[in-house]
Image (tube, rainbow, N blue to C red; front, top):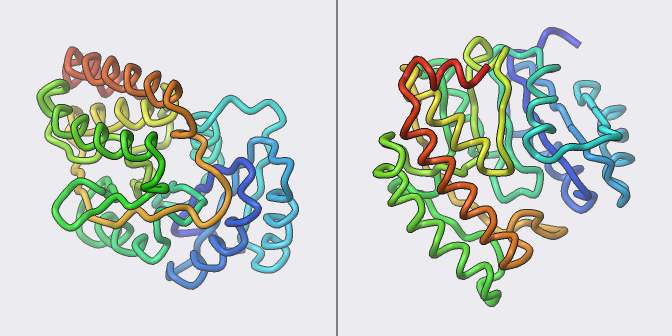
Length: 253
């Protein structure tokens, strides 16, 4: 395979109902030479076997199986460490982040002079339709996430709309050498704060986050899990607020 222009990282854990379709849609949606890096945290439902099949089919799928997984942040970091593209992308593998929106993010970085493009549910034109609206936890998650993002600017001192997006395209020289830290969406809060305060050119692109097509959510499964994350996220924003531009940039490494 030629050196890829774009590396797309898909962290996975038991996504057998999604991963094949996700890779097919990425192949159809994204132009240029790409590599698709599947970082799997020891799935037991057939995800690994399906990713291996796609690796044989397309030849540009990289499968990294972590036998000692340490969560979403570690999976993304592993993907960054092995990525070869000039633009690095990561996104969920459950189709809640439509692959067809990815070219918009990539174009902002590749052609429009931005260092970072983030898919956003909470800027004008974006929507969050993820999860079953009949679930009390999902309804609570949607409402408090909107409130959280409205308060985030005041708490952090950084003007940004979607602090836990996880749908991002970024220049290789901006992200390479960094070490992500934090738990689930917490890592994204630290990353956004550091990028903006260090002077990186960041743009948000609206998208509609839809329900996962198969499997179950690992981040909003229970009320207690959601409550713990809310506390972590708020503390992370307060820490970002205290970090000056130099310290915040250094905190990425």
